[in-house]
Length: 312
Ligand SMILES: Nc1nc2c(ncn2[C@@H]2O[C@H](COP(=O)(O)OP(=O)(O)OP(=O)(O)O)[C@@H](O)[C@H]2O)c(=O)[nH]1
Ligand SMILES: [Mg+2]
Image (cartoon, rainbow, N blue to C red; front, side):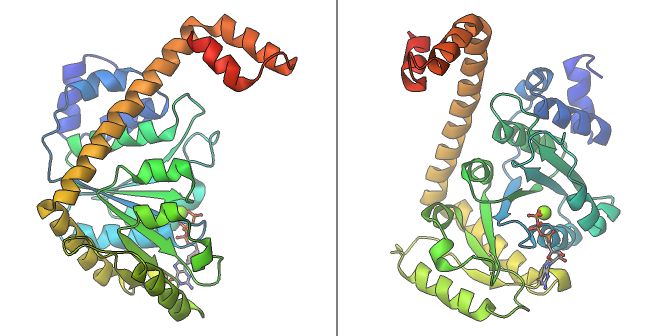
């Protein structure tokens, strides 16, 4: 398929799914062909939106994403789903569980579903996801749902590129307020209390209300809402869609949103630049790196000093 870039670009703009899928694979494999294509894609699609969904394993994210995708698609949006798993670097992208759980969305041929995993390449998954999102926008998908497991740095990096970020919590799974790290509070635009059919949902909600009550809001700030859902029954999903729309309307008119966008773009630039630098370093200084590794093993230096030495 790696013929000429403008043919590929044309196919992508025409929404050719095979081309799109292959380009996303190139992004995962850190193949530079995708960069050549992306370089020609303009950032015009301002109406395109990215919704990030994160939360602990088994919280019901995929079930929720599935239902959200269907509702949004029924509203006439062109929806794509990226199911990202930062914790499985070597599985090569296929997350069987997600494939099985998302039967409903995948049956709907208008919804594009793709699992992504890091293939152990340098730089990691966040870059590949950023690229995939741009590819999807270029292919005409105006809503991209990005599901990612967990709440570590890798996940935060991934959902940071989202316009609206949902954090899914469930009762009785250690998702108590004590367990909610500051990082999560920072990234959450909407809290979802899923599995509300379970005991403890009300008290989790109360805890969240209390926690959010500690945040000082400015008049123009977005107030993080809490939406209770039973994803498996589709309950609360339309309310959630409503809150997402409200958040996105707020984004369009708020100064904060502009600041946030600036930050996201700056992050993206720096991430791509640091990846490129790192690759160059490894390529040019491989011998020296190996030498430094050995010196560390022999306790003749330490990684921090070695890093400084490498950059000399
Ligand atoms: N009781 C109850 N079960 C639910 C609800 N939502 C999802 N589940 C079930 O919870 C299990 C996990 O759901 P998933 O959607 O796969 O969760 P996930 O967060 O995507 O899981 P990972 O991707 O593995 O982290 C499945 O068996 C779902 O059917 C809910 O609202 N109530
Ligand atoms: Mg899942």
